[in-house]
Length: 478
Image (tube, rainbow, N blue to C red; front, side, top):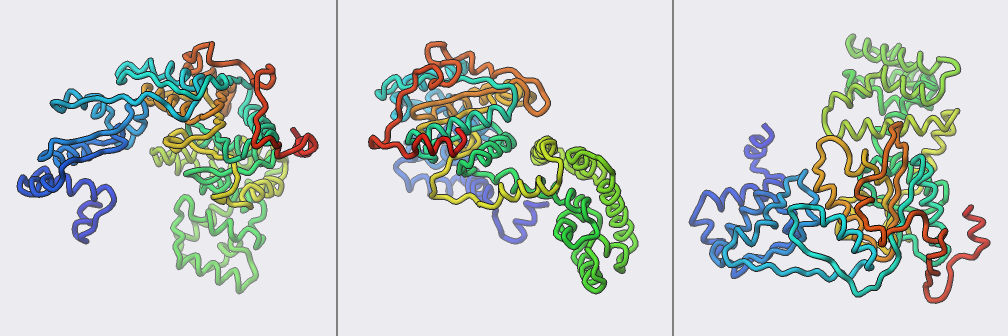
């Protein structure tokens, strides 16, 4: 239906811009000859990420010249979930007669210990094109491997170490935290906020900016004071989530009645003239949130959990049966766990406001937070890799294990000078054990614990000057 609508309107979306030209080349020999004869050669970069349609297009466009130059690294093929087929680069020499392979094995980014760790992990990928990275940058620092009991301990320790390195002259933007999935950012953000470390999330919004988190906090606010005008914005946000038939016209009637009578929007549900079905649905919603909000001696986290259950919010996301729904439920679980640390709603709301008060600003000196997929192509002197646990990375279920291995390779090789890997024994209510990728790093290239604690770290200098004094360190709480 969607594609038919696009054709009726003579419109094309982004993927159509690839599909229609490829189909035209495939089905019209004269058209294909006219285009392929215009080029003496075709060059494709990031070739490890091409999908089936892109491969057809490249083949047809180079049909006349027989000159196709492909640049890529099969060890960095990490996008199978959006159609990339690693076989195209791995089978290139066999598929194209006379093709030659040139290996570029010198790495100009990372030090010897980092590259040897990455080489050891990727060497276990059975189908890879054999190559061994080397560098002229010297040995550098060994990989730091740390283990903590809980995610909060891990995050606090990383934030503290970042503060120490900043005090020794490392710029905030020269440090990055790279994690497997977005939901892991919450505990990391909390630790950075507490330590007053400036940060920026690349390719995502902060935890408290996420729509499901805003919805959940709105449920709490509405339950706390349904008859107060302070809850009006919360009502507007969640009264129709999940859908209760509340359209713009019905909401306008509620708004008008609330203004005429001096009521909150939630209270005006009982007085406004509404269609019977909508009114019954909203009255049931009002009764649910009011009742839960009045339960005495109920912990804040339990109140939130109950609200999400009884309003149907959990069910809505479970029935979504998509990656978005799974992510939403994971974020909600994080928020419920976070609420355990608060006894008053006001304190939680103020904490959330503090976290969202300073929007991420590009171009300033900030620690960079991102997923492994977002990190591809980037580099940082200091890279922290949290949550290397079997349950998270490579993860359970239907994940492509060899692609997870390539993600480990990509993540490690983002580090220029120092890489730190950490894991916890207990995350989100589930016991965990360190990722098997850690054990694959040879012992001579890793060290257990922080290097500074073992007297092995060297003074990091920037022009012979330190940006912070010992007094500044004390003031920062390190």
